Amino acid sequence: MNETLKTIAERYSCRDFTGTPLGGADVKVLAEAALASPSAMNRQPWQVIVITDKTLIDEIDAEGMKLLAAADDKSTYERMMSRGGKLFYNAPCMIIAAMDGSNSAAMDCGILSQNVALAAHSLGLGSVICGMAGIPLSGPKASDLKKRLKFPDGYDFGIAVLVGAAESGKEPHELDMTKVTYIGG
Image (cartoon, rainbow, N blue to C red; front, top):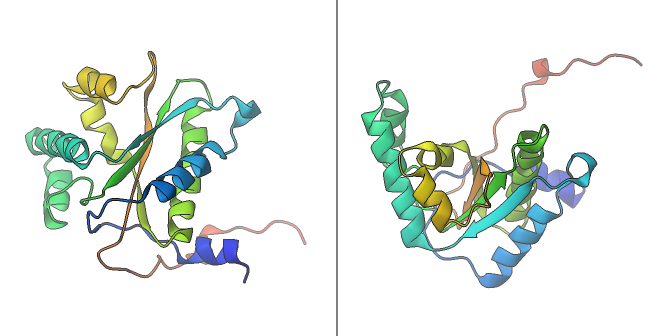
């Protein structure tokens, strides 16, 4: 199996980071992997925001947990509490793809997130693609948070990837071949 296929097969969603800061070289590689992502008609409908300020990540995390605790449906809050009570699992780095709202922006940001996750795994780092960052970025403090995170005017949260050294490892999910339909010879 070649290295690319091995990286794809071995990558898993890490939900327990050590909190150890990433080195600048790793952060640069992850940002470049994000920018190398393909997009529809090469429009690149994103702004990549790399956050390594752990205090700020923890502040956004706390705001998200507060909103989950106040929600009518407590199931997501309870699930996060059972996983340690942190929305971002103590990650020292968050890479946000803010999107411009064009037709293919959500799909393109999804592609970008996979590039970052695979790059992180190839560097020996853990990662998890995280839509939950959208909770605080659409709540009552969204405008302030977007300003502090330097979202361009008119851009909204697309997706985030949390990256860092994994506290522990786990096996990737089992492949469910019933999800594949082959047509043709």
